[in-house]
Length: 464
Image (cartoon, helix red, strand yellow):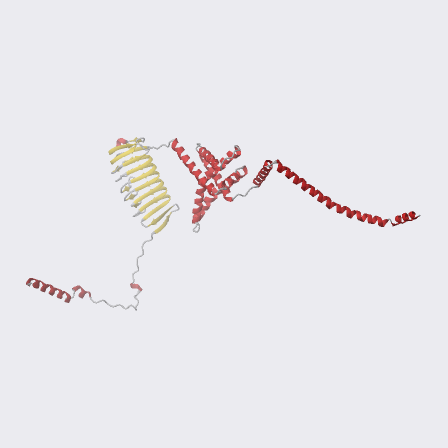
């Protein structure tokens, strides 16, 4: 108990002292100065905030080159491009002739002739016809390039992966691995590779004795040849897909077969080609025109979708048309429209596999198919030839019905015809008799009026 009291007495004394004593920093700070909110502060004392740099900016250099900044990244494009800008981010350069003396974090280059004499902190990606990485070029890590001819003269601290027709390594030191895929590989001067050198075994290599590498490997490129069975299988799958699609169209639109049969003549063939050719030219132009407008982008997307749909369905409609022409016009047979469509699609597929005729068959199929689809969408407006054929067919059908009737019914028809003829004749004679009576009566009256003297003489003679 005495120990507890001894401990509580100093603790309480320290607490009271802490509440009564004011901290030193509160005394030294001083009281805050009150401000009058009604008085406006002078504008000269307000510091204007610093505006950030613009996110996008562009600059034209000469007549055939331009610069576009987006953030820290740089896009440089033109015909003859010489880049000496400093980019803290990505560098994109594209043009015909590129000479790069710039600095960047990553470099992406594409051109016809590329000379890289610049510095990039990390990786270099290049594509073109002729690419040269000069002696003074500085690459922070790896190089990835693809071209017809690639020449490397600089030291690379990372890996090098090249795909080209001709590869030249000249007095270069590469710290990483070198992976080459080329037809000819040339090593000039002293080439040192700290990693593994690997290239395709069918390449022509020269100067390999000048190379010092830790490991040398060759590989066989993977080649895949398509067999005839795979080709036929893919073609048959496309035929089955078109056949099923056309069957669905006939199920949904049953008058399609009549519309296709109506187009199976020489005159309609030329009209369908004309409509199809116009469709294939006008629709892409309209879609591009609407695409660049701000109010009809959805229309452009719709037209592109319609164009792709007709491009796919053209072969099915041309197959149905060709099968109908072969079966009914040439062979004078009748088959269902689906069977005719299958025959035509198979013929078009086989004709498209003939070397030298595939492009012609595909173009003609596309143009004629577009014209046939437009003709089917226009409706069943019959031409005068179609009407004449329709009337001749109706007359033939009526004569066939009369021939198939019984002889008793024919006799009844003949008796009814003779009875009708006799009634007409009697009606004609009855209508003619009143006319003769009316003409005879006036003549007798006139005759009696004209001869009173003759009657008087006859009477006197009889009296005598």
